[in-house]
Length: 169
Image (cartoon, rainbow, N blue to C red; front, side):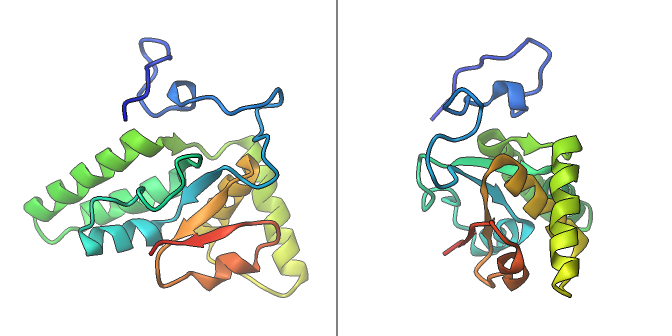
């Protein structure tokens, strides 16, 4: 499914300006549950290992899909560390295909506020999670989205209040 291009000429495909708009006056989803998913690196890794081209087919068509910037960075590290040029090229091609569907969500001021809130909430409860996963959760929560994790079910995401976690099957 190709989305119509509604962005300025020099805006890169997948940027916030080129993705379909959310419903509602405030720019927030109008549904009582989140209508989007931030894809965690664990889901991308599971997808690569399964060699199943249908990563997004099990996700509701009503869910907007985004890649937090930190997930894009982690995925690019996987490309850079590939054992050979062929594997690196294959990984990069698959990532670009995902990016066309998902787009990359930057880590901005609002996400930083959510990051600080989540860190404080977890610290007060005596819990910690990996920093990059905290950034993924903050990105998702700042948008009112859930997080899609790999089948290993990254349990630390479930410690985060007000965050819907779906496991890739």
